[in-house]
Every structure is written in C-alpha cells, then in structure tokens.
Amino acid sequence: MTEVWAVLVAAGRGERLGAGQPKAFVAFNGRPLLAESLSRLDTSEIVGNVVVVAPPGWEESAILCAEEENASNVITCVPGGDTRVDSVRAGVAEVPAEADIILIHDAARPLVTDDVIERVVEALRDDIDGAVPGLPISDTIKQAPAGLVERTVPRDGLFVVQTPQGFRAEIFRRALAEVDQTASDCAGMVEAIGGRVRVTLGDPRLAKITTEADLALVEGLARP
Ligand code: CTP
Ligand code: MG
Image (cartoon, rainbow, N blue to C red; front, side, top):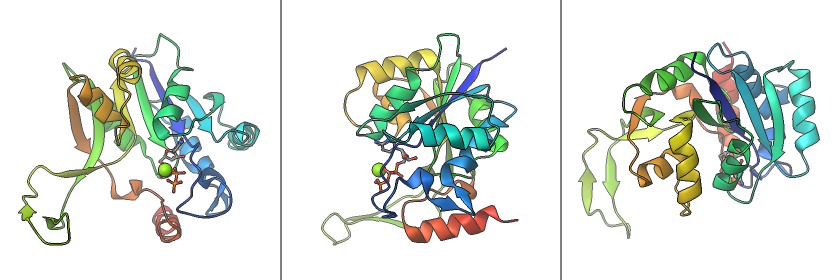
C-alpha cells in the first residue's frame, strides 16, 4: 500500500495579516486557524500521518491544538525556519524513509478536502513526480512591467496553483537537498531538477488567507 505523509507548514509570521500573533493561531470560525487543516488532514482517508511545522516557540501550542482536535495521526511538531522552504525542509526531515508520497500543505489554506487530496495523489501515476491542484485562470492577464501594457497573455493553459502539492518522496528529498534558490512553490524545486509535475483540478475553497479580508472571505466559504 502507498504510504502518504503530509507536512503541514504553519510556521509563518503572518505579517500581512498583522494580527500580532502567528497566522496559524488566529481565530478561524472560533478555533485556531491551524485546527481546521490539521483536523482535515488527520481524518483524511488517504493521508496516513501528519507532521506539523510550527513557528519557533509555538510547538507546544500546536501540539495542544492537535490534542484538542483528537488528531492522533499527527506524529510530531517541529519548529520552522526563516523561509517557507526552510520550514518545508524541517518538516520533511521528520518523514520516515518508508513514505512513498509526501504532501506539503499550507495552514494558510484551511479548507483542504479529501477530493483534492485524492486528485493530487491519483495524478502521481506512471512517470509523474509531482502534482499540484490548480484552477484555470478566467481573468484576462496583461503583462505591463512598468504599467504600460506590453501584451495580453493568452490564458490557455494558465493555472493558479494551490496546496496540497504532492511528490514522490525520493525526488522531493533530492530537490530539497539540491535546489537552494527560493522557488515560489515546492513544485518549482522539483521542476528545477527536471521532475515532471502535473496540474490537477484544485478547489476555489482552497483560497489562501493572506490579509484580513481573506480571513473573513474564507471563514464564509467554510460555512455550509
Ligand atoms: N510558512 C512557514 N514558514 C515560513 C513562512 C511561511 O511554514 N518561514 C508557511 C505559512 O505558515 C503558511 C504558508 O507557509 O501556511 C504560506 O505562507 P504565507 O501565506 O506567506 O504565510 P506567512 O509567511 O505567515 O504570512 P506573511 O508572508 O504575510 O508573513
Ligand atoms: Mg510569507
């Protein structure tokens, strides 16, 4: 059976949200934001075990949160690093060698579902090394580096990508060891070492919480 591990990165400072505490611990419909994705990953039919990456000094609070959610598949909690990639590295270091697939998920995207997880894991077939959920872009995209339009970018084949992003464990570990540039997402690192990455259908409810307006919006999406 394929062993799937999830690394939940929650170690960011949440500067753009500006709540005076890390974003993962801001209230989201009455619980810490972290609790939402953590409990969803914990109860997933596909994910076996979860590693949480917390802001340094917040490990105890993260463990408490896992206990309150009865999240028994949460194996460990480690402190994150200065950048998201550092935090991903810290989390992946806790994933045992037996893991076949590693999913990386942002706590800033609380509304992860088993449907998306299933599509990501399912996409890792044949010679595919990585899979990312994405939504086709519906807006018109203009390239205007200095404010003056140089061109209208054809939308065909353009996607906005989300997390969880899934990878074959072996190639992902290699990408983390070899790529030192700060790719803007995990898949970018696998692409950089020649890995084949597929885009699968994401979910509009997987919107990322960056600002206070996003927080209210995603809280609304969570309500039935
Ligand atoms: N993240 C992390 N470690 C970091 C930076 C980010 O684990 N050093 C995580 C965040 O906790 C979040 C995800 O990566 O779940 C996406 O990052 P982002 O939305 O940028 O969150 P923050 O870095 O916390 O926010 P900001 O950039 O506004 O400070
Ligand atoms: Mg950030």
